Image (cartoon, rainbow, N blue to C red; front, side, top):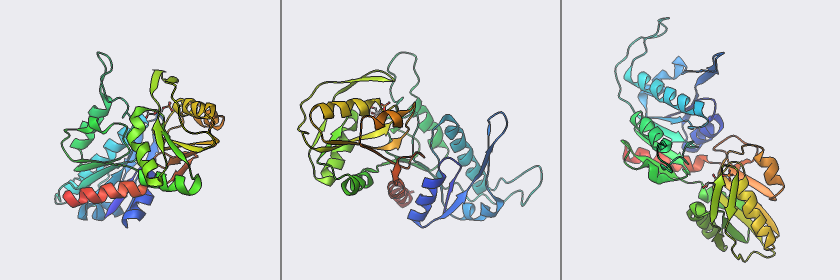
Length: 311
Ligand code: R5P
């Protein structure tokens, strides 16, 4: 069974293929001078794509990731439908329609934070993207989506999976924290599960976002004096949330502070900023980044296996 990816998710796609014992197909990608993307599946892979269900690995981030995801799903769909017509008349032009059998595995679901209409006239972008993608495949697996509720009522099954077990075992081995903190209410479930797996106490902060770069935490007494604390969140973008949470922990005597997340976006010099506030930053490889030390592939593999069992 083949796992195919474009350029952006190649490493995690390769790990997923290994994890599932599947064959990996690197799609050929490049850019035209105006920046538009190009995608091609090698002719030699058509047979395996037509003979078994295919796992397409692609993230909806950055924006060109959405375009690449749409192109890959359409491309695999054409090959399975037997529509191979081309102007150069390379290879066989038409084959029997073997029916679409495609699972989309999304390491990082970009736009997930646009999950509500906060103000009149806004677009619930996370839902719009989910409907488009769901129409083009038979099921979707998403790693640690910010808010799964936005995926309700899509045409095909969507399986949300989490790298919490892998994050917990990495933190236990490399950091050995005495305390886990969620920097806001949104990350409570994730962070408390990490705390449960490591068997250490847990608490959370209440956060108010003033703008994309400014956040405030409501002061709270935390029993962290002399302790090694790991802050666990779904994603780190500017690093503002983690830096403010770390400051609160340091003020209350935390000895060491680490940050762990599934999605390391690290925008606007986040890693430099974080280095001044925390002792270590640990992320999965859902996005390529210098702190990608935890594999997201086992979680995606769990989701793919679950979907294959019901499709
Ligand atoms: C928001 O609710 C998310 O879970 C993260 O806490 C947030 O997106 C992190 O963003 P930043 O690193 O820019 O503070």
